[in-house]
Amino acid sequence: MGRKPFGLHFEQGTRGSLAQCELKAAALERERGQEQKQEQKQDDLDVEDNDIGEKKRLAFLDLMLESAQNGALITDTEIKEQVDTIMFEGHDTTAAGSSFFLSLMGIHQEIQDRVIAELDGIFGDSQRPATFQDTLEMKYLERCLMETLRMYPPVPLIARELQEDLKLNSGDYVIPRGATVTVATVLLHRNPKVYTNPNVFDPDNFLSERQANRHYYAFVPFSAGPRSCVGRKYAMLKLKILLSTILRNYRVYSDLSESDFKLQADIILKREEGFRVRLQAR
Ligand code: HEM
View 1 (cartoon, rainbow, N blue to C red):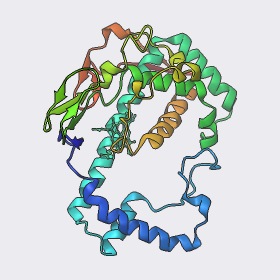
View 2: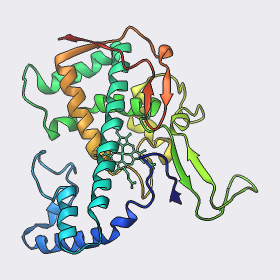
View 3: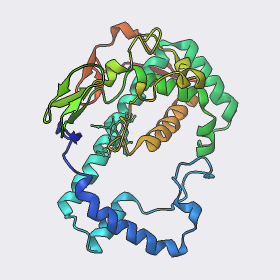
């Protein structure tokens, strides 16, 4: 399927135009690989890694600049577009995700109690910054985060343009080539056939046994497939560090309940009235 242009989010073929760049970059990495060990090729956020902060790969921008200098077919404008995409996709999405999370913590005080208890168990009275290892222990906070992304997915709608006719398994229907297919994650994630009480904020929806009983694509806040979010792991890490730091220092309150939310589903899901929460130093 092709990607449907949809504002900034859906620029056509941006990865395609990078194919040359990626090939060149791969060659470059191979050259550098003389001094690189095999384990350094693994994902930077793999659990086996000791901590954050170790720079093992070129930053994306450096990679593109270096590839361009080494003859890859990528112009300065294309490089700028790639940077714009990363900045845009990386900022508003995590801003929405963290704001919904804090709103929900403010509303569900007993759930916030459990998150705070977990953080106190990890950090005690220490003011030290969170490490990657700490984030692996934030199991309950992670479940709350996933549940936030289920109920309020920052990207509420994904669109694709069909490049060939698609016969549906469900019956004698063919969706013609050229049609735009939209997947409304915001609805998909609240399918009552998949989630009992879909409109109730329940972090236990992400207990491993419950997850195992659901279809793999029943929860797709980062989309799925070859054009899914490239920042997924970074986003989860960033959100855990940010939100744990806030909740280690403040308690969140909300004077509004979820039924007061006026959802605004543009490119990014937001609350029309703003994310109104109160913070009190702990
Ligand atoms: C909670 C945070 C985030 C959510 C929910 C999210 C969600 C998504 C979704 C649903 C898509 C697919 C959009 C589509 O198919 O039209 C996407 C694509 C993308 N995301 Fe994220 N994202 C998040 C954070 C980030 C971060 C932190 C970065 C980068 C630092 C990032 C970079 C990208 C890029 C570059 C794409 C385009 C990938 C492509 O076109 O091949 N995202 N994201």
